[in-house]
Image (tube, rainbow, N blue to C red; front, top):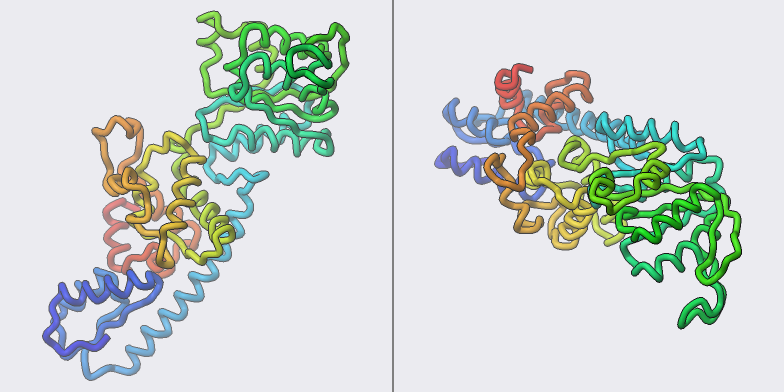
Length: 401
């Protein structure tokens, strides 16, 4: 951009902002007649790649253009490497790279090969069914049926019929004999979600299945042998349920031969950028869009938000934002209104956990990860982070990197 010499620092910043809004990856070189050194420095700090005085020094201009082109190629190469790394941490549909989740992946591999019951615990939306499917797919039974049942979705009488089957005439409406899910899952895996919702009567029947490997259809005294691996899940505290008499102690210990605890998303925030990219890619394919990413303000809001609905809520937010986005990048205004207030670290809000990192801590950690991925190349890191090299040096001093 060439100015007429009458522009101010504020106008320079406004021009750069407008260009970056149109395409955040576009680099801006400002040109003006004898601009003050302070103004040139300010423009670079605010996002311009360079500021050249008139008459133009062609060597300096070509040098900046070559640097921009080199940074673009390096950024593309880094993007390819990041994509390869991200592919390596998609574990049977579960997207994560945090240490706690990588340890869970390792545990799933170890448990999958053994015929044992597994209890998966964690808040709603953390991906418990995906873990159950991974256990099945990595097991010797992967070629057999994987049957899932939400125990809270059916009333007690229907649930028993669904799990154990019924014979013709067992109750009103039972016009034919029906195989239960345990029979259908024979040789494979049955996943019982929300196991804490089972009635005492159904708990007794489930315990019998686990002890004897046999079921009785509703309305029948005949026993049927079944050989199904049982994986259960709950978002409740079953120990507390035992203490209050709502859950059988003997059933709990039968189900909890091994436990996998899935942490909430707010305890593994380093997975959020990876999940966002994964969901954006899926939404682009689903909606026929070409959204490249999200703006920094939107990123900050997503990192600060407490995510009570966990990964499922994040996926819904990205789908909604993808539908609303009118540009190549999802902006803060594309996010739901209740997320937009989280662009600054909030300590007093009850919705933010006490151990949540400040925005500065998140930024420092992110800079460290980017520097590690680019092998310490500060020029490339500055391009990826979307800041000038001078700004990056100041952040190095600020965070003592």
